[in-house]
Image (cartoon, rainbow, N blue to C red; front, side, top):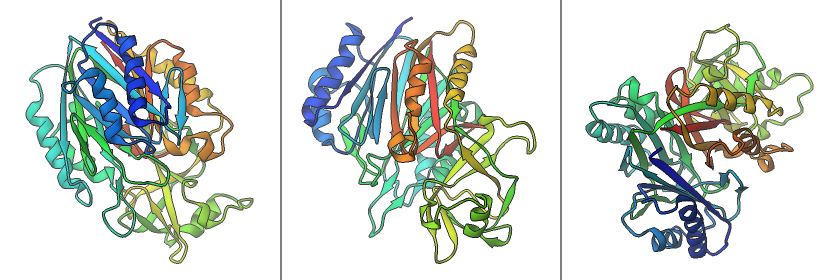
Length: 406
């Protein structure tokens, strides 16, 4: 192999020291190999300027960097969130070319930013060979009086206007957010520190990306139809108030008040054959952001549930055995001649045990399933992007695990 990685982690409360510690651990693993690309993440408790200073004090100013805030960080040995976690991966590769792209002004301008980003990527595509794309964007818009979320659906739509299926099907990504209070998100892009940006890393050459989606949800109802919606708000289901219908679907023993439907109610859209056996990779999950009790409506995380959309109520699983099965399947399906080099995991922050009330961490099950076969870096995100039905889709309550192989 010509590709090597080093992964570092720190929970030091001093931002400068945390950056130094994390990158030194990664450099020790990387050995004498030159750094081709760095991915950097930390929680919002850290000062982004001091983190960057700590990193650059060890690797210099010329190493390309991409990343930003995350609710938490995951590695093969460490898992933490809502604290002072910092994670970095240093990649050294003689077989792979890394290209970085960025657009600013994402707030309230997702479609146009997506088109701009897609055009930049299209103009840099190599004539031959595989390409993989990693997309990281600022999830949080605090420019106005009230918190808003930047939407992945129009961002992806804009990107896809300039990239064909062969490129889009190898896209994974995350909506970055540094804490569950959705404070302002900072992003690193080379020597810049930004907000309101969408960034992409394109890999072309030796490294290829192979991805599996870990929903942990199964359908718990028949299909139902949204009959009235506007932007990200669902007003009616089956021509009745949305909250009333969801309450009935939850069952007679349901005692969850409407105001607690946020981050609890999960709707699934099947991108595959309607009544075929359940296939996790065909389902796109959508979480309720909040309940609009006055109008008996649900505000969703994205604006893609429109009048005519069919969905099923999804039931979350507390059995993590499905994770080991999906991870094993991912390793077994690596093409002949390819060797896994490292893994990157994007995990919905809402799946963390402290936030969903689980007894165990789903990310811990991922670590156990990988079992040290490759180094792992992961983040807790606001939105996950992964392949559903052969196309990249924004996802909620989902884990997206990618193996990078050479």
